[in-house]
Image (cartoon, rainbow, N blue to C red; front, top):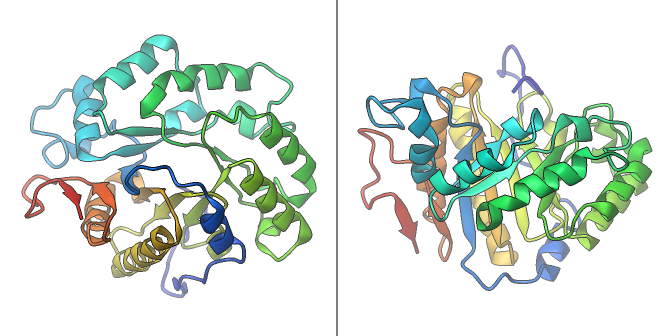
Length: 306
């Protein structure tokens, strides 16, 4: 991830801000799902040959990567959909190969997220929704990553998009322009609209843009995109802070969190995800599943439920 990347992190204040006003209310008002609260942990892709022998068994074929990935992690930040809408054959292949409790979180195509009207007058949005809803019970939460130039002046466009997006498909929104993170009437209006329409927020934790760590939830679903720095000690300290905060959110009514680990070139993302899993396993009453790295197996196995 290039967004928020810095040549050095020595002067970065990685402390986590408090919850933004409205988060506690959103969690309290979020309807309970009736199921076990779940902590989903994943990376940003499964096509990593470098993971063979570490995440995948030795001599694993590329055609089997997803099958093994979905039994190590229980979710994925599905970036391939940002560039191409998958066809029926591809969707069925993904659905068949993935583990039963696995959840895909597809990113909306850039032809939608980076268009001036967010695709509300074209055919891309209906085509995307028709495609990904075929994942059925294995569909987690879609997310739209708005470009950095999409500021509060585009609020009317985002409002129209949210109002027209199919309500039966879970959606989260990632904001990047600086204007959304101040105490402006426009940002509060957007968060209120998202809460009304059950649209979740994406919170990104990255060194060079600490403002996007906005800590505002609008539903009982949270999506966290965590960008590490080659397993620097601060990566682990930040994870500790995150797991503590997410534990607090679960106590307040959070139903599920999708936590995605990023590392440079994704080579060490599984190691960070393993650490997230170890810490998340300590949250009482929450179901989680994480990677069982070769030669670094959790003492009680891969699935933990307290």
